[in-house]
Amino acid sequence: MSDSGIKAALDRFVQKFNQLHTDAPLIPYNAQWPSDCYQENAAEGTLVRWRPTPQRKTNDMFIRIGEALEESIHPDVEAFYSQYWSDPLPATCHDGDLSLIQAWNSEDMERLRSNLVGHALSKRQQKRPLTFFIACTEPDDDYFISVDNYSGEIWLETPGKPPIRKLADNLSTFLLSVEPRKIKDME
Image (cartoon, rainbow, N blue to C red; front, side, top):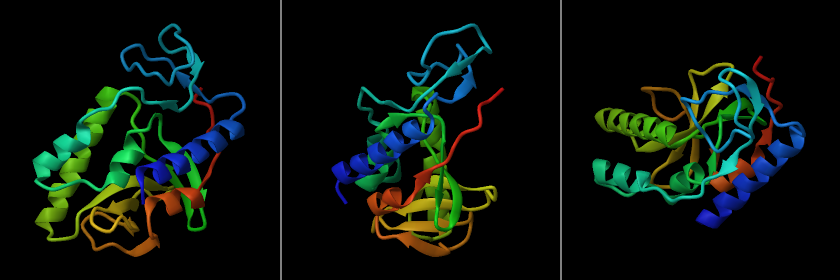
């Protein structure tokens, strides 16, 4: 699937998320954890509105991950993580509830990079195909949803085990099959 297919599917999801949240969700403002997602600046701890916000700069995170792992990263993974700054996005699909993983800011992106590399090294150690996680299931977070780095297929997995079952042929199809869920405001 092309980057543009992933971007269109993610744009569709975010547009539906924003329509569902006519008043953007509230989150405590944290000056030490800045993000373009905040809709306003405020005093520390004050509840402010936030929205998924397009990333304006390209970053080299996936080039660095590929160099560290000595292999190319599937372009769908890069397209998914390089489009928006956001808190995790709650969604539902025919299998149940999930949360699409996103990065809040560049520091969070570096945390994500470390987690993706750690996951990849664990897969290598287990001699399992390389996958990259994109979502967690809810409420049971023992499962996650991943992109197979070679085929681009979407799989349900649990840590340390072989993939459980294929959910979609590609990330674009998967994103088009999920619907946003309402976020409860943090108070």
